[in-house]
Image (cartoon, rainbow, N blue to C red; front, side, top):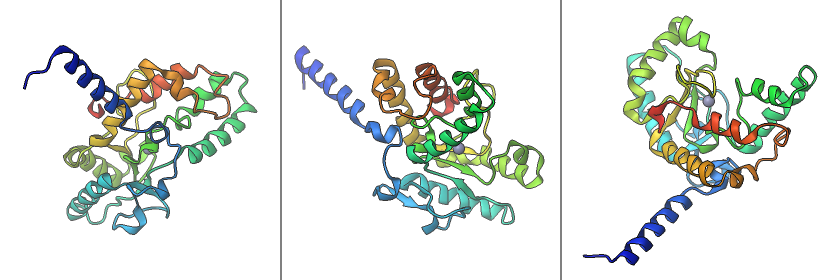
Length: 241
Ligand SMILES: [Zn+2]
């Protein structure tokens, strides 16, 4: 089959449009209810150990995580492998942000500095990978645990050596020139999250206002929002792209 130039251009435009439309904006920014989404599953209905009820994840990453968990337990039956965080939507993240912002305004005057302080450990609502339903935190959210606790050391070694086989990458690794501090516990299901970050990146490049207009968290209009979004969303382990 031979296409003429016009047909080729139309095809190209259609496929670009289809790609750009593949993940709705509200899913990129967590502005939806994962509990009511058919593509998500409650982790407490699976065999995965969880530290609280009501956490959800997309189905495909859940299936892969269960496989990883089973293999880990065969090798290390007595070492904890617990999901301690999964999908956190915008509303949830906004609660965290608001609480931290209020606490820090008593100590810090400069809104940009407040944001940077919060960003050491928490995301701006609308910019968290936890919005996507592809990312989880495992067992502990303390680097200390993974480097100094004997069980943490074993878990961390196993995760690094084995989770990539199930499709997971570690976005917040060491050695990046910005973004979040390293997180040994945070893992991401790359076959899906790489699509989310690609689309986020494309939007930030072509039309950052589309994203920024949806963000209404406290302080959003007093900080270098676009710069911070670009740094914290995009500066992740190249393995996760
Ligand atoms: Zn996390």
